[in-house]
Image 1: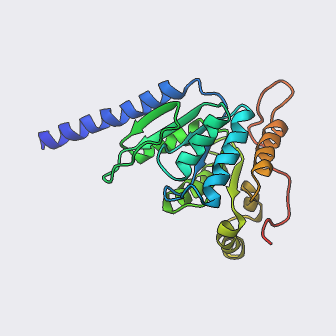
Image 2: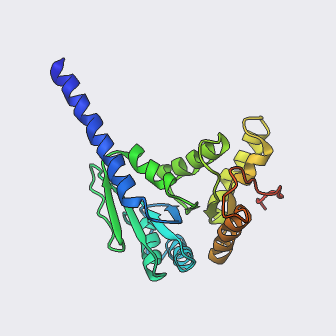
Length: 232
């Protein structure tokens, strides 16, 4: 029993060290956009090229880029950030099947625990750009909406890239979750759907411009105006 307790205690300290290291490394990052998407995306695919373009544009507008540090969309995001002369950050995760960090990171951190890594994604984000992806991408998308909806974090823009990929899911959300009363109709305004990198960047810029007071203070609650359904 003593050995078990001691092992669990040291595990707590290891977890704490990941938070401390993350906070220290990222405290001076400034405005940043966290980007999510499939690790399996190939360089010739639309999602890879689009992720690279949108992050390049964001970097040129002064945003740091944060990704999961691995291949696929994560690589595309860091690569675009570097192309845009911005700070390109990778929050790498240690996995049984080793994830190799991509080579486009200016700042690279390594985590053993997904939950510590996820805190860094959201704590330092001024917005999310979410490309097509799998379970992990869906997890980040719905967690961000939950945190915003429940007031646990300051609201920020959540942009979904790729109508063809997302419209089926969003139609189910609108026609089932909203219709059944599981979420409110206005919750459909918590995210923005587009195919266009320039449109995504302008949406993020406009959101932040519209939610900053003349004094420079950010409004704590800054709902977007009501909009028509984003689904075609």
